Length: 144
Image 1: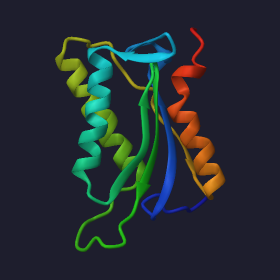
Image 2 (image 1 turned 90 degrees about the vertical axis):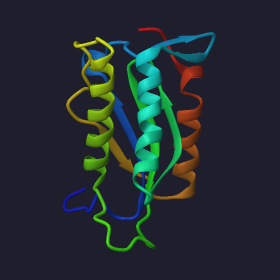
Image 3 (image 1 turned 135 degrees about the vertical axis):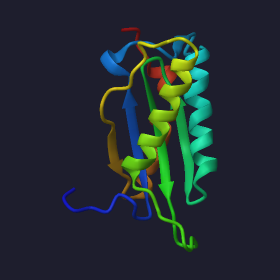
Image 4 (image 1 turned 120 degrees about the vertical axis):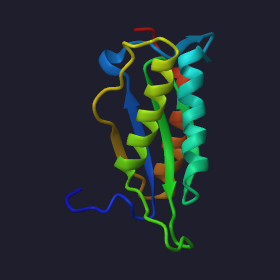
Protein backbone atom coordinates (compact mmCIF):
# COMPACT_ATOMS: atom_id res chain seq x y z
CA UNK A 1 0.00 0.00 0.00
CA UNK A 2 1.60 3.26 -1.11
CA UNK A 3 2.25 5.87 1.57
CA UNK A 4 0.71 3.76 4.32
CA UNK A 5 1.87 4.60 7.85
CA UNK A 6 3.08 1.28 9.24
CA UNK A 7 3.20 2.72 12.75
CA UNK A 8 -0.57 3.30 12.58
CA UNK A 9 -2.93 1.50 14.93
CA UNK A 10 -3.80 -1.73 13.17
CA UNK A 11 -3.52 -5.51 13.15
CA UNK A 12 -0.77 -6.94 10.95
CA UNK A 13 -0.17 -10.50 9.76
CA UNK A 14 3.60 -11.03 9.59
CA UNK A 15 5.71 -13.82 8.13
CA UNK A 16 9.50 -13.89 8.23
CA UNK A 17 11.62 -16.75 6.86
CA UNK A 18 15.14 -17.90 7.44
CA UNK A 19 17.65 -17.32 4.67
CA UNK A 20 17.36 -20.08 2.05
CA UNK A 21 14.46 -21.50 4.13
CA UNK A 22 16.93 -23.55 6.20
CA UNK A 23 15.29 -25.41 9.08
CA UNK A 24 17.10 -23.67 11.93
CA UNK A 25 14.33 -23.62 14.56
CA UNK A 26 13.44 -27.28 15.03
CA UNK A 27 11.10 -29.76 13.39
CA UNK A 28 7.43 -30.65 13.20
CA UNK A 29 6.88 -34.10 14.71
CA UNK A 30 3.44 -35.70 14.93
CA UNK A 31 1.90 -32.41 13.78
CA UNK A 32 3.50 -30.50 16.66
CA UNK A 33 6.34 -27.98 16.43
CA UNK A 34 9.34 -29.04 18.51
CA UNK A 35 11.65 -26.07 19.04
CA UNK A 36 15.39 -26.55 19.32
CA UNK A 37 17.69 -24.03 21.08
CA UNK A 38 17.50 -21.58 18.15
CA UNK A 39 13.73 -21.94 17.98
CA UNK A 40 13.49 -21.23 21.71
CA UNK A 41 15.46 -18.03 21.18
CA UNK A 42 13.15 -16.99 18.33
CA UNK A 43 10.19 -17.56 20.65
CA UNK A 44 11.80 -15.78 23.62
CA UNK A 45 12.73 -12.75 21.53
CA UNK A 46 9.14 -12.37 20.36
CA UNK A 47 8.07 -12.23 24.01
CA UNK A 48 10.88 -9.73 24.66
CA UNK A 49 9.64 -7.54 21.81
CA UNK A 50 6.06 -7.55 23.13
CA UNK A 51 7.22 -6.58 26.61
CA UNK A 52 9.70 -3.99 25.31
CA UNK A 53 7.06 -1.89 23.55
CA UNK A 54 3.86 -1.39 25.58
CA UNK A 55 1.87 -0.23 22.53
CA UNK A 56 2.09 -3.60 20.78
CA UNK A 57 0.21 -6.82 21.46
CA UNK A 58 0.69 -10.30 20.07
CA UNK A 59 -2.60 -11.97 19.10
CA UNK A 60 -0.99 -15.10 17.66
CA UNK A 61 2.56 -16.29 17.17
CA UNK A 62 4.33 -19.45 16.07
CA UNK A 63 7.86 -20.43 15.23
CA UNK A 64 8.09 -23.08 12.51
CA UNK A 65 11.24 -24.89 11.26
CA UNK A 66 12.15 -22.15 8.75
CA UNK A 67 9.84 -19.22 9.48
CA UNK A 68 7.63 -17.45 11.96
CA UNK A 69 4.07 -16.14 11.72
CA UNK A 70 2.40 -13.58 13.92
CA UNK A 71 -0.55 -11.29 14.28
CA UNK A 72 0.81 -8.11 15.79
CA UNK A 73 -1.34 -5.21 16.92
CA UNK A 74 0.01 -1.68 17.14
CA UNK A 75 -2.19 0.47 19.37
CA UNK A 76 -0.68 3.76 20.47
CA UNK A 77 -4.01 5.36 21.38
CA UNK A 78 -3.09 5.90 25.04
CA UNK A 79 0.66 6.32 24.55
CA UNK A 80 2.12 9.73 25.36
CA UNK A 81 5.64 11.03 24.68
CA UNK A 82 6.82 7.77 23.11
CA UNK A 83 8.06 7.44 19.54
CA UNK A 84 5.98 4.69 17.97
CA UNK A 85 8.15 2.34 15.95
CA UNK A 86 6.96 1.25 12.55
CA UNK A 87 6.27 -2.39 11.76
CA UNK A 88 9.59 -2.50 9.90
CA UNK A 89 11.48 -1.13 12.92
CA UNK A 90 9.77 -3.60 15.25
CA UNK A 91 10.61 -6.53 12.98
CA UNK A 92 14.16 -5.21 12.65
CA UNK A 93 14.50 -5.25 16.44
CA UNK A 94 13.08 -8.78 16.62
CA UNK A 95 15.25 -10.20 13.86
CA UNK A 96 18.43 -8.42 15.04
CA UNK A 97 18.13 -9.51 18.66
CA UNK A 98 17.20 -13.06 17.66
CA UNK A 99 20.20 -13.26 15.32
CA UNK A 100 22.61 -11.88 17.93
CA UNK A 101 21.52 -14.42 20.54
CA UNK A 102 21.71 -17.32 18.06
CA UNK A 103 25.17 -16.22 16.91
CA UNK A 104 26.30 -16.13 20.56
CA UNK A 105 25.30 -19.81 20.78
CA UNK A 106 27.90 -20.50 18.10
CA UNK A 107 25.63 -20.68 15.04
CA UNK A 108 27.45 -18.06 12.96
CA UNK A 109 25.73 -19.14 9.72
CA UNK A 110 22.23 -18.33 10.96
CA UNK A 111 20.48 -15.58 9.00
CA UNK A 112 16.99 -14.34 8.34
CA UNK A 113 15.73 -13.70 4.83
CA UNK A 114 16.37 -10.03 4.11
CA UNK A 115 12.78 -8.82 4.39
CA UNK A 116 9.44 -10.00 5.76
CA UNK A 117 5.90 -10.26 4.47
CA UNK A 118 3.10 -8.24 6.03
CA UNK A 119 -0.62 -7.97 5.47
CA UNK A 120 -2.99 -5.48 7.09
CA UNK A 121 -5.92 -7.34 8.62
CA UNK A 122 -9.04 -5.50 7.54
CA UNK A 123 -11.97 -7.32 9.19
CA UNK A 124 -13.03 -10.00 11.67
CA UNK A 125 -13.38 -12.70 9.02
CA UNK A 126 -9.83 -12.14 7.82
CA UNK A 127 -8.60 -12.09 11.43
CA UNK A 128 -10.26 -15.43 12.24
CA UNK A 129 -8.90 -17.05 9.06
CA UNK A 130 -5.32 -15.84 9.71
CA UNK A 131 -5.48 -16.65 13.42
CA UNK A 132 -6.59 -20.22 12.64
CA UNK A 133 -3.90 -20.53 9.96
CA UNK A 134 -1.18 -19.57 12.47
CA UNK A 135 -2.47 -21.81 15.25
CA UNK A 136 -2.92 -24.76 12.89
CA UNK A 137 0.35 -24.26 11.00
CA UNK A 138 2.04 -27.38 12.46
CA UNK A 139 -0.98 -29.49 11.45
CA UNK A 140 -0.61 -28.27 7.86
CA UNK A 141 3.16 -28.69 7.69
CA UNK A 142 4.56 -30.90 4.97
CA UNK A 143 8.22 -31.85 5.19
CA UNK A 144 10.29 -30.06 2.61
